[in-house]
Image (cartoon, rainbow, N blue to C red; front, side, top):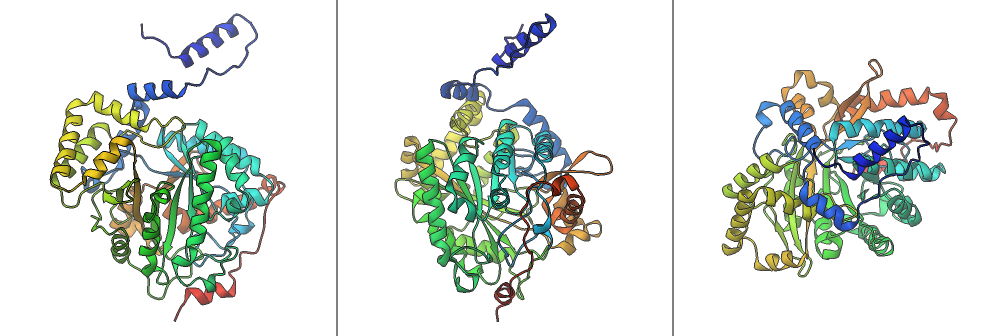
Length: 510
């Protein structure tokens, strides 16, 4: 007979007491210590449930996208999102929500938990979940419902997902105790902060006075110091992601953002991902007269890193939607190096074999920092694959493609990664015409940014791409909430959604 886990013993003893008619005391099994968690991560680095969901996801992909360097279906199913509070105090030139977003009530806690459960079923353990809508930190703070957001994050964490709060961050900067509560009580480890020149409403930074992305570096530095302070105070991990909308007004300043991040390894150890998003003509966006192209965005991104990065070295869903390049950062020297070498056929084959064999491995930072132990466990269970990884690493060092300093720092644990890339949303008109456009249809089918949305006819949850939300679904969700008297009776934050005149002037530069 197989040995039982502590959770199995807890459930068995509870059932026995119920059968015997004895009172049941609901005492949860003890949480594992740091080293117990690390040992379990080494022994069981990949969970069977995750592998089953990945297989199902792989089978759902269009045939032309089932390539060795495809991440979806091999390493992740997709990133989920909630249909949360829609309120936001900013009036950005490029907002993908409907015009009435600030008039819509916050969903109930029960509804939020139901969404989280549905996302968990679609993604399995370790799946990323964006806690989003409008600006959720803004909405819950200003409505006096901070406890609810803490509970939403806690519930997502306890369900086995990895929640990321999406925000412009003004509320968290002004009320750092709120972020601390989200970390300590909710288990929050990741925050995505949107900072760029499209934003109107940032205190002390009127949109008309912001002439370059460098003008916003003090805001980025304030977030950096906040994270370092809370890490030290709480002893808990906290990481940020940048999200930056790219328009004709700030396209030439993309290198400024990347170079600022790379100037100090402490910054890139806080800001672990930078997502540049070419503007999409959807929602209440004021579209540029000369829209930027994904190709130009990638060119500026490479300029900022100082490396000729390969755009499709890895594929997340559809190559027209996502392009990413992870960089290795030496914390002793600050130097960066592309983790995926350009035009290296041997490395690409190794990457494909690695994803096919152990793609379900999750290296997300957790409380006990088990990621290195999961990786070690995978390599121990696949020794030939481990030897191939070691051989390729040695080859890259000997040929000078990886400087020796990275090997030294890696052995000392003084190396981290920074993901830089591009997420390309689609125009509303493109999504509306998906049935007549096979490329758009393939992009939606392969989408790696999908949330669980309830079908009001069947009552079942479905996985809906964010581009479909932007094109029509948000409006449908909002209409239902506006007609719900129970939501209307709860504390809300309502404000005019009209765009200030200054926004229109900035969005259409001469």
